[in-house]
Structure formats: structure tokens, C-alpha cells
Amino acid sequence: MRDAIKARLLEIVVSEPVPITRHAIARVISEVAEYELPEKAWPQLLGFLIKARDSPVAHEREVAILTLSSLMDTIVDSYAENLPQIYALFAKPLQDPESLEVRVTTVQALGRVAEYIEVDEEAFIASFQAMIPQMLVVIGQTLEAGDENAAKKGFDTLETLLIIEVPLINAHFTQVVEFNATIGNNKSLDKSQRIMALNCLLWTVKFKKSKIASMDLIKPIVDSLITIGAEDKPEDPEDDSVARVAVFPALYSRIQECFRSTNPTLRNAAVMALGVTVAGCSLFIQPHIEQLWPFIDTGLEDSDPRVRRAACTALSCICKMLVDKCASRHQILVPRVSALLNDPACQRNAMTALDGLLEVLDDQTIGLYLHPLMERLVPMIDSAPPKLKGTVVGAIGSAAYYAAKGAFEPYFDICMQRITPFLSLKGEGDEQELRGVARDTVGTLASAVCRQGKIQTFPGWLS
Image 1 (cartoon, rainbow, N blue to C red):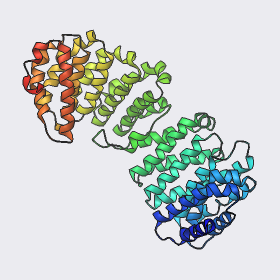
Image 2 (image 1 turned 60 degrees about the horizontal axis):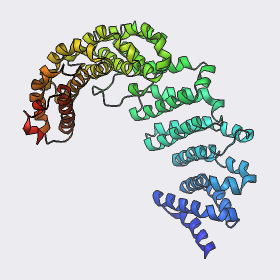
Image 3 (image 1 turned 180 degrees about the vertical axis):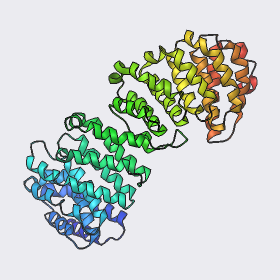
Image 4 (image 1 turned 90 degrees about the vertical axis):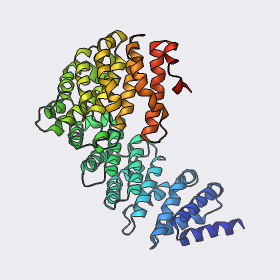
């Protein structure tokens, strides 16, 4: 009965026409093999898989590779003497002439195989490295086919190869970097496809810093990413875009060059690059921050709204990472950001920057700006677009929270009168978000004035 079940599994896995069912059967085979192979109780399995790999039927080739990769734990232990031949099985389907699915499954399987290659296995490393260029070809083919799920499997495999200690990717490292940079720059591709390549490039920078430096790849990476940063971005800052996903290391000289450009998209890219660089490597940037402030100062007053928005976003990043440096420049930064609160093209970004500034200033410093800020913010509770109201209410809450105790009391009544109606909103989406922000802000305002009597004047919303 035991042998009959195993034989039947091998029959139905190649005859099953539905992919999801076929894959499930392959996983069952893998589970059974975990018990049978160590006992040498299923000698037919490996021969069956090798035969299926060379089958003229594409789905049989695909299931053979899928099963082999699922069995790697067991194969490494049970067929140690045959590993060179087993690893070699993956080279042919990587160039399958008929099925992209077979090729993608093979790329994915190689990511699994990579986890079992040891640092001292030079022959295995060399044979694996030889397959890297074809793996890149297959990933490119998934992009051409518009198969996002298959492309994700390919990029996930590349990221695995970057993380593991064995240098499987080193022989073609420059090619891998150029591949990801080229995909990231290809405007004809879908945004999500480009972002996958840029994420992979980010992992490359994260895990292979010394390799990038030793192979003089910093400049081409920077040049590629600054070009992406010059692309237009969605109006809604919460939306993803290729430019926002790109992370720019070591950009100072390029920022200088771009900021002198008459092209506002390049100035925008330069300021965004500055902010993201500070967020990613603040310790490196800190000694040079005084040389970078002019880009922020000028950017906040740039003639192009895209650059002004970028400067606000960059300032928000700097506020989080270099608190003292921002606080020391409040006389320049607060007035410039405050001026943008009345700029419809920059209001949301200016609110975010203002919130960042309020967090880094002490209560006495905030006191210098509290009155002019409230003169701008309170009318905006009514006049701001629906999507911006929550940001305005949140900024008022921040001003109250960080101001000196009691300093906010003159503004308590007018703010409560305008904010408490939001507590009665019943809708979802923007209304639900505004209701939540209003609830938090009401508590913050009450705490700021430290007077329970004030709270009792609003029994309606307390209930």
C-alpha cells in the first residue's frame, strides 16, 4: 500500500491540469519524501524528477523543478554524494525554450539552492555564478510579459542572493546593479515593476556597501537615482511613486549640481535626495549640515511648488534625525514654513514640516511663534480642504502640547468651538480619520490649559 500511494502520487502530479492542485500534490510528494528518502525507501523519486525535467510537456518540467527545490533539505542530507549532478539539473530549465513559468520556477528554486551552498564549495559557487546572467534575463522576460507576480519571485530571489554570506553574486555584481538601475529608470514599465527593481537596489546598497565602493559603482547608482528623483510625483504625498521609493546615498556633489539647474524637476530631486539621505545616514551628514541648509532655505522659497513641497518634506526628515541642528535655526525655519501654510500647493507638506519643527523646539521658543501660528491655523479649521482638516487639527494639538503650560489658554475656547463638531462625524474614510484626530486633539487641548472647569463647558461632546 505504501509503495502504491507513492507511485500514484507520481502519476497524478504530472497528469493534473490545474496548476494550484498540481502544486499542492508536489508539496505532498515533498512531505512524503522527507520521511522516505533518508530511509532509502523511495529510490524511484529522483529518477522520476530527472525524467520529468526533460519532459516535452511544460507543466511536467515545472513540477519537477518545484518538487526538487522543495526537497532541498532532504536531498542535501540523503544525496550528498550526488549534489553536483543535482545542482546541475537547474541549468537547463533556466533556459526553457517554451515556458516562462518553468524558467521563473527555476529562478525561484535557485534561490532555495543558494541557501545550501557553503563558502568553501568553490565548484558549486562557480557553477551557480555562471547562471546569474540568465537569471537576470528571465526576470527581464517577466517584466516584458507584464507578469508582476513572476517578476516579484525573481526580484525576491535576487534579494536572497544579496543577503546570504556566500558570494554567489559577486562575479556579476556590476551587471546586477546595472540591471536594477536600468529597470528602475525605464519609464515604459509599470510603476510597481520599477519599484521592485529599486527595492532590490536598496538591498544591494544596504548589504554590499564595500563592494559598491570597491567597484566604483557609487557614481552610476547616484546618477541613475537622481534622474528618477526628477520625475513627477503624485499630488497626494501618501501615494507611492518611483521617485519616492529611490533612496539616495552620498549625493552632496550631485545635489549641488542639480540645485543650480533652471529645471525645477532637478531642483526638486536634489532637495528630496537631501532629505532622504539625512534620514538614512544622519551621522555621516551631521558634520556637513551647515553646508546643506542653504538648499533647504532656498527650496522653501523656490518659485516652483514642487521644490517648495520637497523642501518641506526634507525639513521634516532633518527634524527627526538632527533635532538640535533644526532647533538652533528656528528664526529662519519657522517663519518660512509658516508662510507656506497659506500656499494651497504646499499646505499639507508645510503642516508636516511645522509639526516636525514644533517637536524639536522647547516651550519657550514655541511661545515666540504661538500667536502668529494660531492666527494662521484656526481659520484653516474651517477653510482647509476636507483631506487637510485633520492635518490642521493635528498641528493645533501639537502646538498646544509643546507650548508652555497655560500658554495655550487664550486659544482654548475658539479651538474647542471649531474642533468639537468633528467628534459627531459619522462617516468613514476621511471623516473617520478626522474624527479620530479631533478626539486626540481635544484631550491634548484640555491637558494644555490644565483647567477642568474649561472642560465642563462642553458637556455635549463629553457624553
